[in-house]
Image (cartoon, rainbow, N blue to C red; front, top):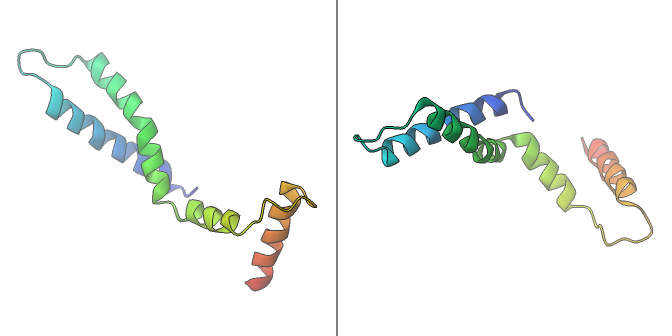
Length: 92
């Protein structure tokens, strides 16, 4: 995970929270600060997922694991992953 990923998550959370507040808040019954904080906390989890979609390290890990044949019964999953990482290092 890159260092910018949590920062992106907080930015996305803030945007999501503001959108939810502006869309659903009624002028006669405004949200309390506790409700706004609860919306912020709940919005953080989908925002982390959105930020991870933009993380190139996650895409690289996905590309690496999609190459592994986990149906091979002769080796354990750890051995298959280590073997694939060795192949990647040799190619570089």
